[in-house]
Length: 557
Image 1 (tube, rainbow, N blue to C red):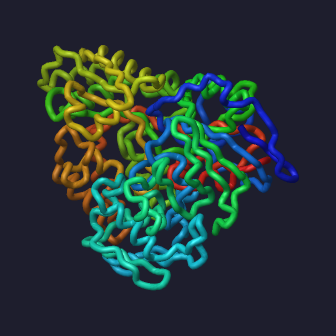
Image 2 (tube, helix red, strand yellow; image 1 turned 90 degrees about the vertical axis):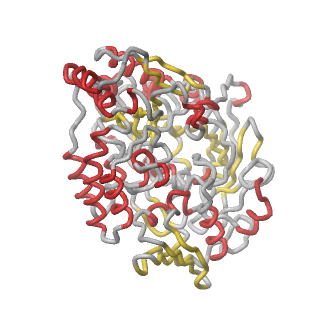
């Protein structure tokens, strides 16, 4: 609960969260935040582009306490190499700073540029300290980046072309590569470039990032050994010595209300001050009378479903094409997303490249892709041409507890029935859903999985590579055995070409092929959805929330 103070800090009591029926669990719903006017938009009506705002005006008013809900649930760790959650960006700064419009500016590094095709020079600020007052050094950067060279790091793919990372000056680090990597600079504007204290990390070992081990970073908010109460909340405090200016919120407290109905009540009644990734199913509640407002912003997120097996109908591109042609996207956006989404042709959305110097090439390539259209007769013909035995139901897995995913599966099921395919829905518990992505045995008996994917940083190569490339080349989610030699070659060129125009053209050529093969059947892009108490401002409201300190400028109106 926000406690606003003006002109000085005095805590204002509100109804305690401990008296509310809070349901804590995991909802696999990942959306993006945004900003709109107080009136919002009418339910199930189109959203104009001018209603999407990347950030709210920065605050200059102090606030004692803000309570924020993390709807994805309590994280297992705050270690940037092991977890992607919305708490970490407010704790650990990155070498480069991702802006709300998805452009990249200096961060902990004053400069990070290519000296030549395979030598990348990082020049560091000389005025940055960790929360304990110790100076950030090149050794800390070498330690932090080096941890991502371990295949267990979630950012490992960004470091596969790295040959060496070493200190090269009092405030400089040099990264050497086997080949040029056009995506690396963008990658370190996200958690792949998060910097932690080497001394603290080595002392904590495997406990680093846990409730027992903690962290030592440079960000606008800090934690200590008493900050995290497992099963309850995480309290973070303003870093008064923050190199980029102390935040206005003295205490930012995270709670884990994941049930959409419970959360919408808590937000609209003012018992929780804000949340990112709120459910579009709660649109009418958020746009009614309440303590705050629904905010809409540009996003890189999209709902899609893809194959989980290299055998049977799901592995056949013609079956996926047929399913795509059977689904009415306008109806999907209207009913499943409550109007809070837009048509998206493939899994790489325009917002991911809109700040690139070669944005025009990427946009032209995107515009040339075929827009999804309903054609039942053509879809039926594709099913027949596939030669697959479709007498048995195809199983679609979705996370349990999410209205959007359950409705998504029902749309797939109903549309498939129109073209002679039978779909069975399997709602998985969080542990089983998570296991699907890393354990082949957990995917047995499942044909498709529906997900909401997003890009944390700019760049176009990394995300589709997970689905389109062979597993030994980075395609960790390529479960259907897709292996197109020309696509592989073009994607490699898109990543390694030193000339940005050449890289962009290579990606566009690859995209023209893999988009048609529907390794992920994209259903719709969704807006970044956030809810914020009307007494607050300063929130980042675009997809940049995943990689930037979105609460740095948060505070009173």
